[in-house]
Length: 72
Image 1: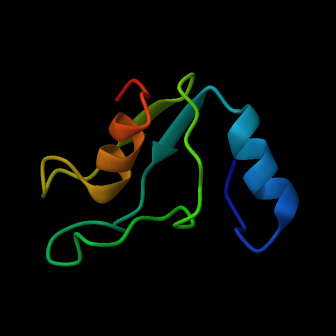
Image 2: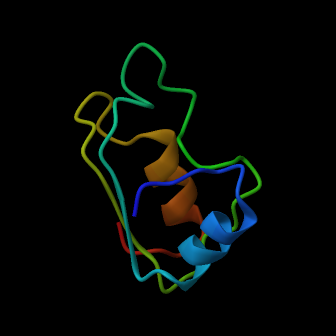
């Protein structure tokens, strides 16, 4: 699903998702300190998170997901 993060149903949909794939340039060097999900997004341990960014090797999105116990 493409996401409009201003819509509450979008964020709710992410909580129910099993797999989250990030396929934009958000988080790519040199702007490695950003990620596409809202900062308050609460990753769930059942989420499988994949980021297509290759530089840096671990993006902020992946770091946050791993910290919450997700499979990355």
